[in-house]
Image (tube, rainbow, N blue to C red; front, side, top):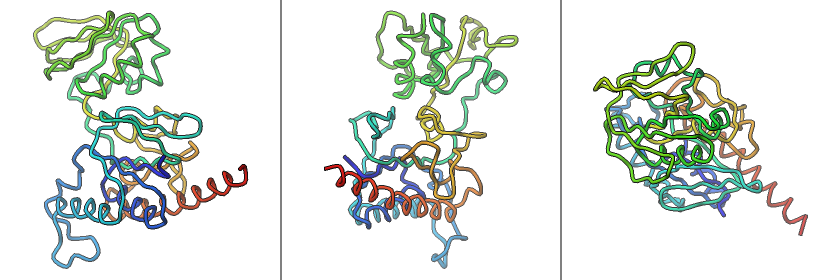
Length: 294
């Protein structure tokens, strides 16, 4: 059992971990995807680097600093997060981990698949959360767009609810998945069609597939997706937090680009620090309460 698990190894996540570990909290950072920081050729507006520093070097230095501090780091893909008996259970492609508190720090929302009609039909048959919306598609035919572990996780959420599920990889390699009511199609997608709601998928070869709903699960799940699944309040693809980086879910924090505002390293470091200080306080109070009940 960890005191805190942090998802994301960018400036926000690493900064949180540095403070929680130095406060002697058992800390785990899980990260998988490349950080947007790595794509910055040179950063010249961050304190302490008189000649600037490349984003890649800053990112790698942060990870090494975390290791030197004694933080556990695992490069794994998080595919599911649940709250079980007031604890967060994180499932990755490699195993399961539990924590008293959880920090989402994987950056801002990724680019949506370049498929015509996705934006137009959001909330009208296009969804980004099977846990949230599966109920509305009982005994109906749905589509999951994606090909990785995240797409398979979303499919599993739908498998006992929907009548038929079509996993559309949009040209990517087909995943290994077998179920009586699941079919897989690798054809590239041209667009989403419908009137007031989604009605069908059109492929680039001219063929079409009727569907009642579409779940977008391309690539890897990020902070926004996990926040929504846990019931955290989001607004315009940003996680809503208070001044201490707390969400409306007890024990769940978010910091960095996923909370909106200026997308700068300095802002991410600040929010990571704020989150850490609150987590340290909260975990210590949890431990005191536990001792009282013994």
